[in-house]
Image (cartoon, rainbow, N blue to C red; front, side, top):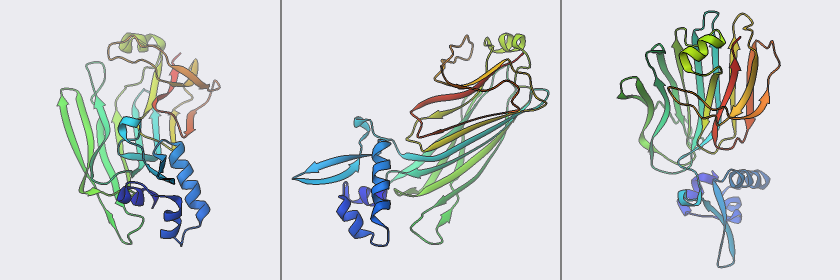
Length: 269
């Protein structure tokens, strides 16, 4: 509701929001405004003695097109090192006229098996229009050998406030290193990682890694912004938290994360 009105008016006051939405308690509107300001989506304005709110422009460090309401990544490592992955994201459009969103990619090489994938489900809803629900289209774009990008396309273009719920599934054979020696030989890095990229203002993300058979890792942690290259060597990131030894499930969650790349990382035995 706030985003819809801000886009229409290019700026709006709290009084106008309360007046236009009498069915919504004013404290809920205040909480929504404070949250969007804290995330850098909205900025406070002052025009002719009139206080209000408007979308923060890109050149002011404002958001691109979306607010991430939640992102959930769950990876499973089999006893022989196979990887299965489910990813789900819930996003809200911040601007009118958005036609597409990149939503995932696959990179393969001679050292990594070509993953299999299944796209979907995906659902587009408008919280203010009853019985409005459509299915966005997934596009698969092959940019070069071993590099594939998934993209969602929206027709008609999105309006501010619309919500998209999408996900996909990946599977790859023996992609995880089973020992430190194998990790260094294949990837020039003793750490194995599962990560998530935060490019948009976000409320929440979760990374879960399930290790079959009680995999005896030597160390595990949540890290931010390691420097990774296809050929290695890699540079570790800053450590946010560490996991106890012997955990069968490594799970990390953050609320309102700062932009960057986050990884659940572990060192094989």
